Amino acid sequence: MRILNAIHVGVGNRGTWPLQEATPARGFQPVAIVDLNPDFRAAAKELVGELPEFENLGEALRQVDCDVVIICTPTIYHVPLGKQALAAGKGVLVEKGMAPDIESARDLVAAVERSGFACSVAQNYRYSAKERTLGRVLHDEQDPHYVGTPYLIEYVQHRVRPHPGTLTYPFASLWDMSCHHFDNLHYWLGAGFEKISGSAYAAPWSPYQHPNNTSFHMKHRSGCQVVYTHTHDAAVNEVRIRIMGERGAVCLDDDRIRFNPMGDRNFSPEQWEDVPLSEDLGLAGVLADFHHQVCDGVEPGIGARSNLSVMELCDGAQRACETETVQHLTHS
Image 1 (cartoon, rainbow, N blue to C red):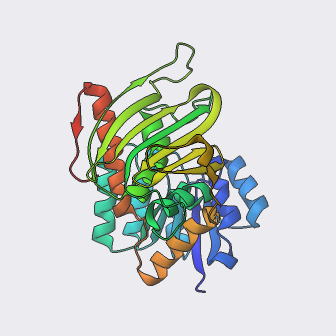
Image 2: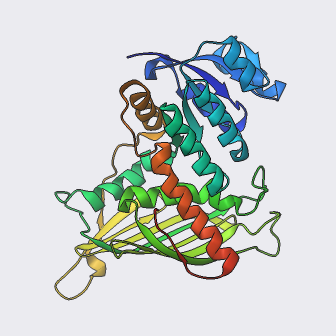
């Protein structure tokens, strides 16, 4: 396996995962760390050993030879740092969300097109066991729990997250968190959302500067309808997903997935079957696909160009909330 030398940008908080996961065994070797916070840099060196450290990416690129740049800063810095790395001829892996707005998302993809270098987004949910299991029962006609053509998906996540952190810009929960869920929808259904309506709202006790709870109704070109709800001010953490198809229904409740086949007349409450989970690839799956993209030119589902469809759905969702009208989409 070719070892890719990596500069790590943003090494505190969420930025610790690539330091721990992007190891030589997976084809990556850290060669420098970049962060404005000296405490974060010190903690990072406790994980990976003594490395050159910098306060800005430009200086690191001038002094250190690398193949790729892994960016785990707050979302608002992803695009300028990604463009800087691409212009220097480096592959880029950027944390989700790819960008805080559609204009900058398109700007990053344009930089990818100009440079010809690899760029992916660490949309890791699609690599987890439960999301891969739902993908399997949607795509694999030989699976005994294949649901057939889906006509309705209900997708709900409630989160107890009382501290805004970096989610201080308008509709941050869409661009920083719902992007995961929208990427899952693209993984399951493919690109092709045609329209979206919905609203954003705040709980009276919310510490967030902007409304961060959202509800949407989306229509995919396949005819499948999606009803989506996401909150940050909930009193309970939970994920619930229901997929209704021509051959049955599959339901996820946190980590349990069950299947109910369609009977001759109706669904029967006695027919629920537990669905075995697919292998959990986790962040190793993200890194494997990014490594394959850099070394072999194979564009993964998390490639920046594919992720632009997710960003366009985030943008349509934001416009639907701002205008309180149905938004018609053309590329997502």
